[in-house]
Length: 109
Image 1 (cartoon, helix red, strand yellow):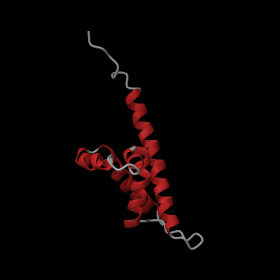
Image 2 (cartoon, rainbow, N blue to C red):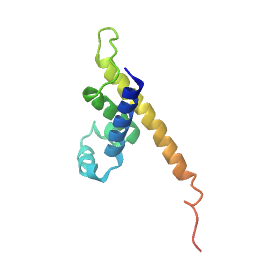
Image 3 (tube, rainbow, N blue to C red):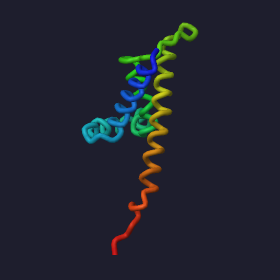
């Protein structure tokens, strides 16, 4: 496990989760997923979907290989949690910037 591999994984999985949450190209897929009762909430929330996207990406590219108690999927779960934490911090930072923008609440007279 190298730092560059971990950074690459985080950028890749956060990018996939933000594309899933906010890109127009995925809107028909998100609308279809919204019809499924038990999948709706975990995949439509940007912060929740970041865990699942990180978990899914870790099956294709996984920079960290941990063998904890001979349970190798533990690594995939950890990668999903790291992606969720990074995406949550970025999402909160971006929303705080947009709410603190001094020009966003100006009225034109």
